Image 1: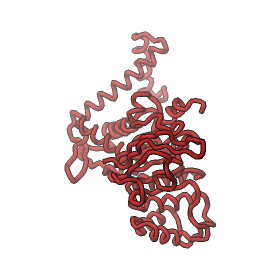
Image 2: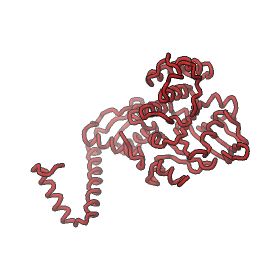
Image 3: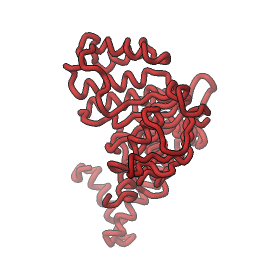
Image 4: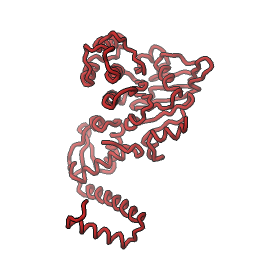
Length: 126
Length: 232
């Protein structure tokens, strides 16, 4: 994994884990690698991974069992919540981008609709 | 716990002041990046703490012990130059370190040498710069020290050797020790440092947690470096 060094690295790792949960790569009840092993894999400081796990535990996305390790939550509501959050962020970026292009709300919606319909027909490439 | 405490250290070479009333405190379990342009005092500071040169004024302690023989036993120093006799073999170096340092773990060093692709029979004089760099870091990190001082561990190394050195540092760093890496190659250590120390004219110009600095300034450490030193 390569990082954008202008953004705190722990945030980028958290983001990746959330994506992996939403996409199903990580499933409820899956055991996370140990802090040390994960740090080695990502080539980052152990303290960075420690912080990632702590923050994710605070957000109830991971839970830890003392002496065993950290696990992915099986709570579907939380997974849904992550999905919502990530969708909101994507939408925010999209809307901001369209505004910068000078698209009105109506024009943006029409463009989005046309694009998605085209995508269904296979006439617009992803 | 505090691993290193530096109290107003000054170092002068004849009329030139290299370290000027420098104060510093490092804690266990952290990796520090020691940054600064040439002649900002990085090497002098490391050599001083390693006990290879004496301060003109001020004092320091390592894990609560005042500077002296006791602190030398707690500090592992990796010099920029090649300090290994050219006629020795890789295997010789291992026993050489074992004779010198009671805290040196030959078993750990042997395992790490294998992982680094080093052969015991190879002669120092026949090693490439990359292989020599790998050997030096294995030797330095296979002591069970409280404080590791690494002076330009990536200098002259190709990307693969750099990665190997980085792995070695991460492997040896733990909650009981502290690692200080003096380097010009900031990119290499962006993702592994906890804290950064910027030296300027023999003093600490700025020090802080790198993740917090990124968050508050929206900058990488390398960009921050350019801001701190400007055209220097």
